[in-house]
Length: 310
Ligand SMILES: [Zn+2]
Image 1 (cartoon, rainbow, N blue to C red):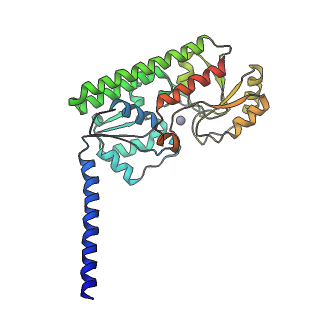
Image 2 (cartoon, rainbow, N blue to C red):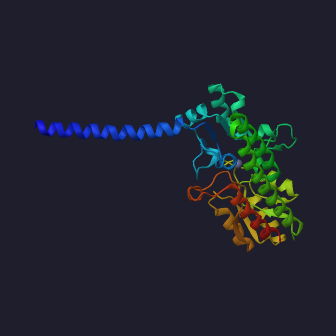
Image 3 (tube, rainbow, N blue to C red):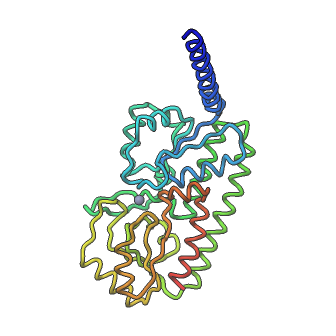
C-alpha cells in the first residue's frame, strides 16, 4: 500500500511539473510579446499582419472568428479582456460597431491605443441614406483600394508610434503593401477602361458603395444595405431580373458568406452564372487556415469584375 502511495505521489509530482512547464511556456510567449494588436474584422487583421511581418514579439489577434458573420458578432468576456490588454485596437466604427463603443467607454481606453477606420474618413463627405431615410456614413470603407492606401498608412503610423525601435521594418513592409494595393487598383482601372457594360448585378446584401463609386460603376441589388436583417421585396427582385436581362449580364454576384439561394434563382431566370465578389468582411475557416490574404481575395475580384463587365 505504502509503495502504491509513493508511486502515486511521484506520478502527481510529474504531472504538476509537466503542467507547470506548459503553463510557463504559454505565459512566457505571451509576456514576451512586446506589441499586442487586436482587431475586430479580417481586413483590419490582415493589414496589421502584413505591416508587422517578420518583426519579432508582435501578436496580431482577430476577435471575430473566421466564418462568423461580422454584423451579428457578440464579444465574450475573453474578447473584452483582449481589447483591454491591447497596445493597439483596430475596429471599423459606425452603425454596426455599437458594441465596440460600449466596450471602449467602459474600459476608458486611451484614444492613442485605438484606431477606427471611419475616423480616418471623418472629414470626407460620403454619406448614404439608410432605409429610414437617415443620413449615415457607410462603414465598408475598405472596399475601395484608394481608401485602403489611407488606412494602411494610418495603421503603420500607429504601430511605429508604439514600437519605434522597429519603425524602419514597419515602413518597409508598408511600402511593399502599398505597391500591391496600387497594382490592383490599376488592374481594376484597366478592366473598367475596357468594359462592355458598366452595371454590376448583385443578388445579395450590398457593402460595395465605395467600390462602385471609386470606378464610376452602376449597380443594382434587391437589398437596401448590408445588414443581415435586410428584407427583400418581390418587386425589387423582379426589377433586378428585368435589368439583368436587358443588360445581358453574364454574372449574378453574391457575397462570400451568403447561402446564394436568391442569386441562383435570379441567375436561372436570367441565364447567367453565379459568382462570389469578395467583400472581405471575414474569411472562411478553411481560407484562414490556408493563410489567404486580403490581397488574394482582391485578385479574385479583379478576375470576376472582368468577367462581369467585359
Ligand atoms: Zn457589412
